[in-house]
Length: 207
Image 1 (cartoon, rainbow, N blue to C red):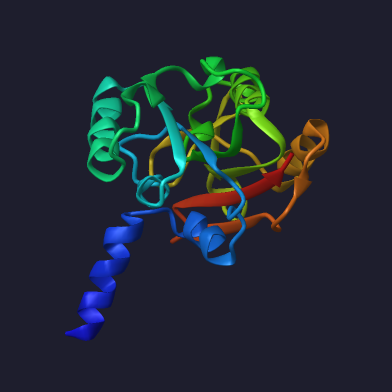
Image 2 (image 1 turned 180 degrees about the horizontal axis):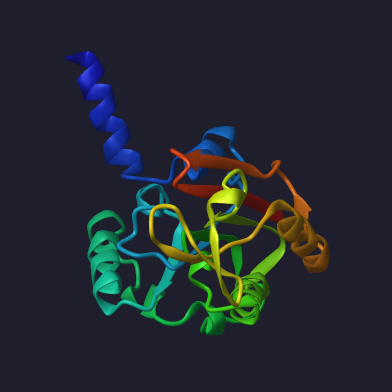
C-alpha cells in the first residue's frame, strides 16, 4: 500500500511528464529557471510539475482545445496565474519578446515541420525567446537507428515504419544546428528506437 501511495504522490506532482524531461528535473538542471515556455504545450502534460511548484509558466499551441485544457490545469494548480500565459499561436511566430524565458520546452513538435525552412523558422523562433544561459529541451523524431527502414517523400519528410510521416533529423544535422545557434550541448544526444518503428531523439542545449 505504501508503494502505491508513493506512486500516486509522484503522479500527482509530475503528471504524465516526458521521461527525459523528468530526468533533467531529477538532475537539477533547471533549478535556476523561473520562467518557462512550453512551445507546443498540448494539454500541459510537461508543465504539471512547474505549475505546482510555482514557476512562471507560459504555453502556446495551435489547437484551441489544448489551450483551454492547459488553462484549466493552470487554474487548478496555480491560483492567480494569468490565463493569457497560454495562447493559440504558431511555433514559428511566437508572440513573446526576445530573451524572455529561462527554459523552452519543445516536445514532439519539430518533426511536424513541412520542410527544412519551416523547421529552422520554428527553431529560430524558440531560440529567439530564450535568454542567454537559458536551456532548450527538445524531443523530436529522427532517422537514427532506423535509416534503412524509411521512405523519403521529399522536403526532409519520410514515411516511418509505423506509417506516420515526419520531418526527420539525424545526429549530424543536430550537431550542425547546435554550432549554427552558437549553443552548447549540456547532455549528449540520446535516441530511443521503439521496436524499429520510430526513433525519438533528445536534444538538450544551453544558450
